[in-house]
Length: 227
Length: 266
Image (tube, rainbow over all chains, first blue to last red; front, side):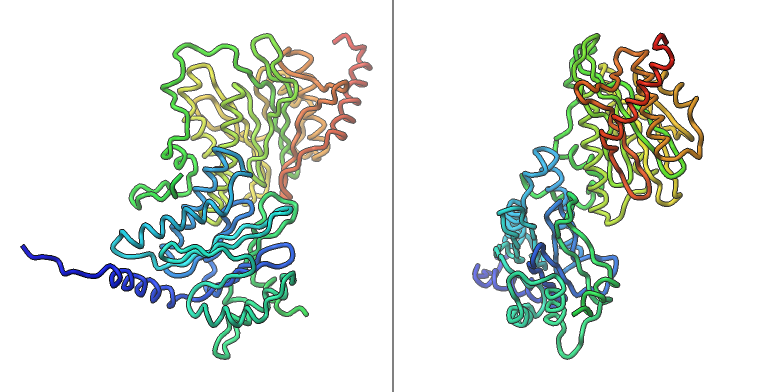
């Protein structure tokens, strides 16, 4: 009987993390940021039908980068969880923190126990209500959760993009300013992104129960051009 | 609660009903008592009619328990989603629960699939839910809803009716069901024209319930003393709108005057 080779746990984790990071780095980046009265999610995504940004619940949205089939599975699981919780208890009992914890547990579990980690990074955002502040939960491939209150950058080249975006970020800015800065930060190497390369959505109070709204390309062009 | 992730081969897809079934949140029909249940509140008369630019749905506010009034302010007409509504008659408990599940089901589909179900698709979904309720119906907890909405593809209002076994039928003009359904239908039949306006349709729906309440003890009429009026919803291309009580109070006053004019003997 042959003995399996010994691999140090540190090495094993490092290999897995490298593998996941490589997969994520290949994907295009995404920015989630607060603005006065809402949250903006802006992703570089040339596809019109394979979404990176989606609605989860009345005041909760999801964004993912990396392998599409993997984050889409997480997106659907999030919708199922939120709808089930809202149905079993009440709509007001559904919150992003609980969902972010579940995602973190699942990703952590897969990272340590499965053959291959998920090559995804996800963002769960919740629009604040009344005195409660908006929240952004950035969850990594290994289950690490980062709770951010201003903005979050995910995907390939996220550090450089985050630095560029951080310089422009201003508390209480308008959605147009936020969008223009996000597009500016996502545009690299002299290649300026246009509305057709972007997927943009907001969580915003409009008096309706559901606050998620996709912003169509024509409106994105208009918002980017204004001011 | 764990993250509801299913095996690829047995994924419930966009069906929320299937998800709650897998998670064990639906009632077990085998656990319901063998004999017909007594003393369960029942909702009574509901009506729906088409007009030139949409549909109108209406329901009275009374729930009865045998010969007693169980509730004076129950609501039987609900928005199913932005473009459709559902009205319920029958055992109030399971009916209200079915509506809640149906509402989540439609929104769930929309979020998972990223597109809206067609009106026909929504009507079929409701039929499946009624069929799943059949064991409960056999115990005396039948639910018989009316479903109506704006069909964005065909650009017209449509009405669907159901039987306890989940049979689904489309009505071309109007329908009313529940204990006072026959009287309500007769009233609508006499006043109905396919090209009537939304305002006329709202008035006719309120009148149908008013007349039903004259004949059927389980149907509640307008109650100006307590300020209770039927729930009336107008659905058109602009979405679901619940008609204001002030508007209904005006119609109720007119109908009362009309009844006085008749000599109030009939």
